[in-house]
Image 1 (spheres, one colour):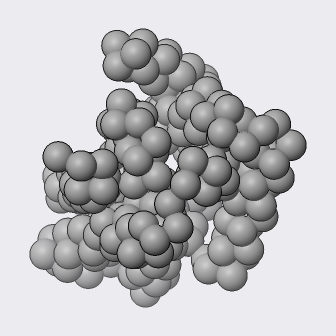
Image 2: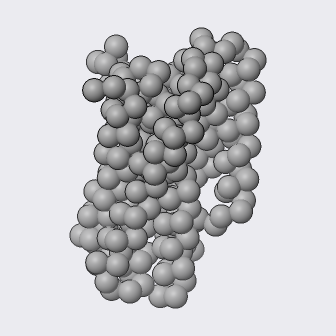
Image 3: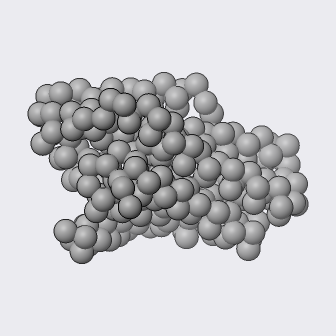
Length: 252
């Protein structure tokens, strides 16, 4: 199987992990704050490790220290612009502020679905780019993205289920947000294929590393901390770092 086909398959599987989160959201109208705090912290740790150890490292090896960091900060800046233009608060943020009406919950769920869909779009590109660079890296990125897509699916399904009482609607919206992953990979394949080079992949990897670091530090870790003021957030981050280091060691 060539790298392009493998990258598309991996990005699709990573996107489908959102469905797992949606299924978990069907089991309860609101996840326990400590469990979700641990899960989001874990996701943040995974994303930070992949971004700094694998993506940025590979980019520096391809295009050099300064160009890779410029692309890295461009990625962060682009994600900041998306973050500012598209509201996508997690349900947990609202739940910790004293509850919300059914209308607010429904609106929150739709914003989460839209925001996560937009965030999943470049992650699909990331998975494809990583696979083209090295299939082992592609598997590692897909695993990291899939892990953090699970709580995202739960974050979409929970408010919509609480607001509408419709498990089918909640599951559908959460699943749809995950499908932005293979769409992003498909567009990347169509755009990158004619211009593919080691340097271009290096810039893409650095930029998506910036995107992932922004998501981890601006969304996952702060929301994890908001859910529980104890140590569950940092324990999740540490666990994510350890698990990702171990998984990459096994793939090495």
